Amino acid sequence: MSNKTQVLRGLYAITDSTLLADGRLLPYCEAALQGGAKLLQYRDKSSDGSRRLHEAKALQTLCQDYGARLIINDDVHLALELGADLHLGQEDGSLLQARQLLGPDAIIGATCHARLDLAEDAVKQQADYIAFGRFYNSQTKPGDVFASTELLEHAQQLQTPVVAIGGITLDNGSTLIKHGAAMLAVIHGLFAADSAAAVEQRARAFSALFTD
Ligand SMILES: Cc1ncc(COP(=O)(O)OP(=O)(O)O)c(N)n1
Ligand SMILES: Cc1ncsc1CCOP(=O)(O)O
Ligand SMILES: [Mg+2]
Image 1 (tube, helix red, strand yellow):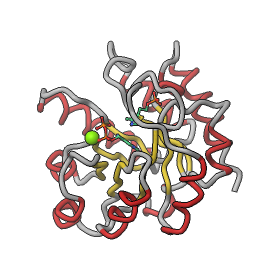
Image 2 (cartoon, protein in one colour):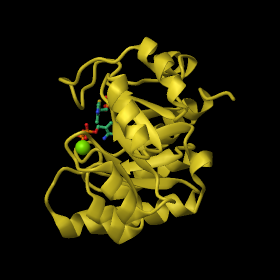
Image 3 (cartoon, protein in one colour):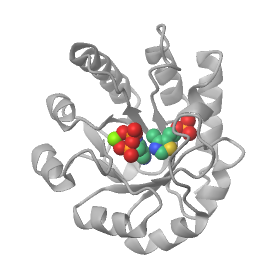
């Protein structure tokens, strides 16, 4: 398994059950990994536990093949069952309890919206990365509050990798990196594509934005 510091810079691909329906989940995620994605988040809001377990296991195998890490969104129990990593939002449970359950090697990330105080709390509770956003208009989550590039700069003082999310494309991603984003978390800009080949090409282009 790749260690934390190796994977906390670069493209962070996030699944979407609509964009990746009809058999696209595995080929499109594999294409993202082939194109260099370092983290892959399984984000599925359904309550179909057996499908979720089956899909997450398949994604975990893919991630292992490509030296990437699988992050489970929202669900600490699924992460524990798989020995996978975890992303928690402000309403998704305690970071400290998740750390106790998953152990020191797990990557645990936290949503901080557009607030530095939430990021400070998350770091105190041993989050491995802090996520801000949305930065631009997002088709996936249109109502979320906007975060600024100044916030990215202020967050550098926390000395914790900063993930940017929300409406990120190949045209606006480099600005966020310039202002301190260690990772770009992307759904539409990566997976709203006509073919797996197009996803791979986009993933390569996102990965190439990280020049150092
Ligand atoms: C990397 C990353 N950042 C933010 C989120 C959003 O988490 P949350 O606020 O819990 O919203 P949902 O994604 O659960 O709808 C995320 N998932 N990943
Ligand atoms: C989950 C989430 N949290 C804030 S914006 C967002 C959606 C990101 O998706 P997209 O890259 O399609 O804007
Ligand atoms: Mg959540």
